[in-house]
Amino acid sequence: MIRRALVLSLAAVVSACSETPTQPPPFDGGSTDTGPAVDRGVVTDNGRVDTGAPTDVPTIPDDAPTCTAPTPLGELTGTPWCDLPLPAVPGVTVPDGFCIHRYGNVPTARVLAFAPNGDLFVSSPSTGTPGGAPPGSGSIMVVSDDNHDGAGDTPRSFLAGVEDVHGLLFRRNELLYTLQGSVMSAPYCTGDRAVTAPRDRHRRVATLTGSVRWTHTLTESTDGRLMVSMGQYDISQCPAPDARAGAVLQIGAGMPETGATVVDGFRNPMYLRCKEWGACYAAELSGDGWDSIGGREKLIEIRQGDRYGFPCCVDRGVPVPGLVGAGTCMDVAASVQTYPLHDTPFGFDWAPASWPAPYGNSFFVGLHGWVGSWTNAGVQWAPVDATTHRPTRPTEFFVRGFGHRTAGGNEQRVSDLVFARDGRMFFADDQSGDIYWVAPRTLRMPAR
Image (cartoon, rainbow, N blue to C red; front, side, top):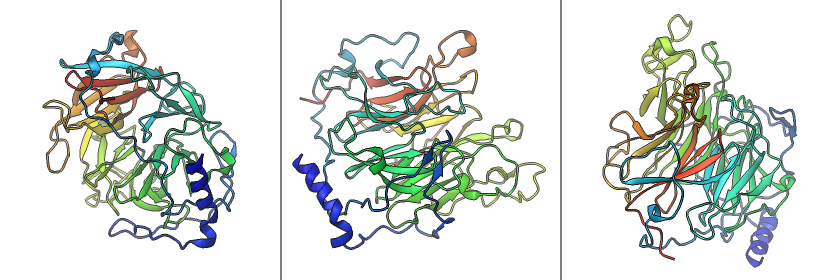
């Protein structure tokens, strides 16, 4: 209680006794897009009006004591994770030398985020998804493992009444989450498993004017810059009538409330990830109707001022045939990696060095698969260049057994994928709601 009282009391007086903190500038070479005028009443895709937080709710000053310090992780000298007495996962396979176990279940598990103490937070939207996921609980859920047995405890609701929640991000003293028309901030201290302030007191971080899709995701760069994704549906008007509708925006302190465009020309950059080597990435879902013209899904690196050409350009130097205004598309940025159209890359991450060769430090991606059939749903991997961290060859399957809907099998589709600090890979299935972890048989639990 003392730590929370200190943080909140400091936050309450910041507007009266502190100067505006120095903030990092936009990405090098970028200009600030102030966007249109702010309208505080944003209508979400379920018809509700999200009025955001009162304007007198202050931000937490940069010099406020943090209450989100990571819980120390013991040396990896305990029992091997794969030796825990947990049931196998029927019909799902991983390579020799690895094990896979079910961790827990959260309806329509879409985005995973680890809290500083290792608790797993999961967004469970109840708003319908374009891919046909069943309705979730309309909440942010917490799945802990207090007895360290490898199986998640009963999920708890951290924040309810957020039907269109999707992106999650922990940072100093707060948990950021996305809604259709906004990015919001709830107070958070390490160990919290229920929100400590009602939703109408949460701070609005950004207003997502022009939002088409509600499935935004969030990330933070190593120098503290916040970004949010904006996605749209298939269109054929070239250039796009609203470049902001398919873009990655920088938001937060130092930015206009509507954010500033970092990269545009996307159809739907569903998942964002920044890594410790300083680069940030997005998984871009290309035009659904581009099968006959070479369309591919993409992994891209987020760099200020880049554009990716949707809906005018299939790829760099490849204009959409017959589309007036497409030009040569030679100004379109090149992708890091591509995937077959409709394989639908969602969450992705890089393995730690603790994984055995050839998987250590490699790239992993969760594929959502084809809409309707779920074909090619699963987890794939590829080795990377040791300097650039970019995949050096096309991805191949690492976790098999998902999808197969048309063959009478399960209806599982991989959504988010993220590595925990202890070295395990976690991924979710937004159809069944199951959450799994994978570990090498050589990986040991942290010493307790």
